[in-house]
Image 1: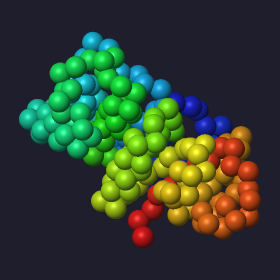
Image 2: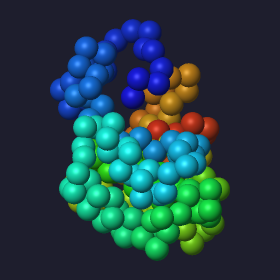
Image 3: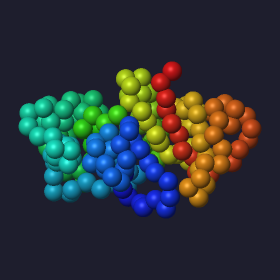
Length: 189
């Protein structure tokens, strides 16, 4: 996503180099950070529309997409509110909706269920499964072993930027590995 400089190697996203062809590469990726970073002066509907503008998307198609995502995430009744008036769970949903506004092929989720209650966590898990079943590639980080078991077929443990273990979820958990930093990938069956 261009948030850090690599020290060696190359990164390609769906065939596009993230340095020499960064605009094309980033069009394929939606990012949902752990921290909320919305413009506090925009309504939540406008947050989505504004985000779409970063990808050159405008007009009626964007407003219809924004309304569809707000409805899908249970935020339609709050469309005109500022994000500061939303609960933590609603902010989490808005973060995911914003990551999806431009129809990415890959979404990166950083601790998507951090700080949410159990009911919302299960709701988000179901939504992530549905998105993955619809063909979206999802990478997420989590510190919750239960979440990794529930959502992932494969787990990779990353330490200091290096993959130190990567196995099918059941095998890695049976091995009793320490899951300090986990990088997860949901893949279609």
